[in-house]
Length: 372
Picture 1 (cartoon, rainbow, N blue to C red):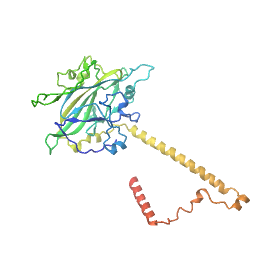
Picture 2: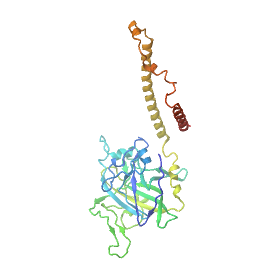
Picture 3: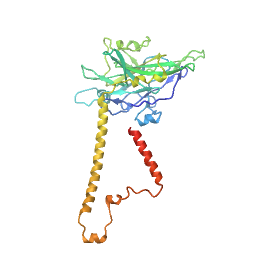
Picture 4: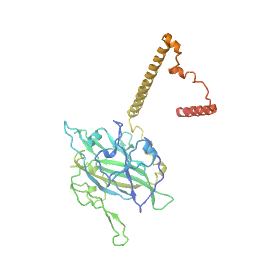
């Protein structure tokens, strides 16, 4: 992966909208990227829009698009609803699974972006008692007991920031991590999806508060989704008695939490450190497969070129070595094939020999620099 350093961005609480974007999904099994919206995920109003910001992102094959997730600077959000979407038919024997199930079984990962920072997911290492980070987070998981695919339909977006030293009321995003969950929401679609802004309607100077976006009434809400407790979703809520994960089929409600944390110790220049320290995050077989694929292509093309050259040389040698008839001798046949250029290889050019020498020397220098 390639990480492009972006210009220093800062956000104010008065202009508190922070964009979250989605990138192509990647897999450690297939090595083939998939566009995020090829799966039936929630889309932004008006449809997704491409958002490539620089040439480097385009050259490495990124497919960065807008998302329906709405973030507000320094404003925590609790079980915010995104949309209700139909993931397709359920898993049955003899029936082809839906796109989401296939993506989960192929170990595809989502790659989200906030302020040009790719999302990282936490992995607790019980052996060394350390917290490691992986790029992106899985679309879902396959249960070890039922062997069924479950989708991660809830995420905790954990964003760290610190204030700008030279400006007041300005902040910079320095880390973006995602903690995915699978929660089976039992719900009824709601017609009240008004997300208008409340407050300051009478000119009393009260702070404007945006109403939560609502697309459904949850029948069995976890504590973070009941609208009364200001508590974020955690492991104990999701895996409490009576709770089940969400199958990757049928109509699914997608939700998310946003957790803002101030981190004075993490500086702007160090915000990429967790990505650079992802040792063994991608198995070595991925790199070997890429190398083997490249070598096979080189060998095939080299064999094709060699076969063409050998065929032409054999034909020329056969024609040169055969006995010429009296008619051919009389016609004084012209040279053909490789003999047409064999005397021109070491002949200096008639126009500007110095230019040829400069070009050859520069080319040799660039070749040596590229190799060594």
